[in-house]
Image: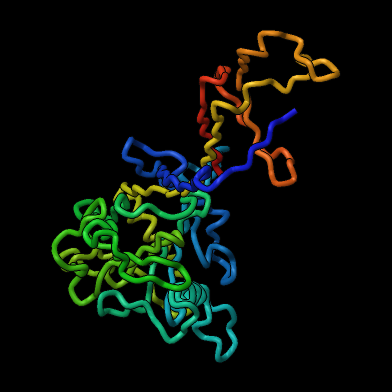
Length: 351
């Protein structure tokens, strides 16, 4: 038979613990850089204008043929006018209606809340094309961790571009809060959330490198900035912008990531907890409710329980108002209880 005591004000406390783990299934070192940048020829099939490969390329941490290979993120290329991919149809008036235009419009709608008059502007420069790195939802839990994003792009063996977010430089202040995707931080030259220099723009006449949206789990990169020459701050990425052509631009960013050989990213998980403080005062819980201790008339079977009763608390049950048992907490060892002792038991529920 259970003894019920109602919780009072102050007996329960809510808490949120923030946990960070690598977003990748496997890392090559303790820093947490991704193990590899593999793609699947089955998924990345661009022969059809409407195949999945025309819209994005999945990136795996191992050869997709491996049993434990998992998708880590996807790469997509978007273009305002639909250049760089095949048109959906060849009919007159359908020019430019392609996968790259759909990608650009999709992310524009996400970021700007459906405002189709907005275009991506990178510190004063509005390119026609963008690259998108979209992290797999299962990899980052609740959000991407800002301040530890580090990745490198390379267009050649002697030029590496080291990029990060600017959350440390800006003391955690977002560049903007977008209604559809939440916080927006700048992608800048530097490492560990610290911008190199005093400006977001290191690319001559091409604007800044891009934005990261940690609450939505994706990065948007300025194609013009990446395509700028090495002398002007880019990596000379040769993005194809042909009309009704299969330019396979995601492969080019995949190659730049492979040559850079560094992509560190953590996922953030907020674990909600509730603490229940179970209080057993000196006058409470000193007599057992076990039926074997009493006779039918209520007399105690053991005289020692009359003047100096002692019990042992072993289990705490949490009930609702209807006295339905919802959760059970077991103590690591029995807790002695008598009129000279009080007990405070803390129960933690994670959900």
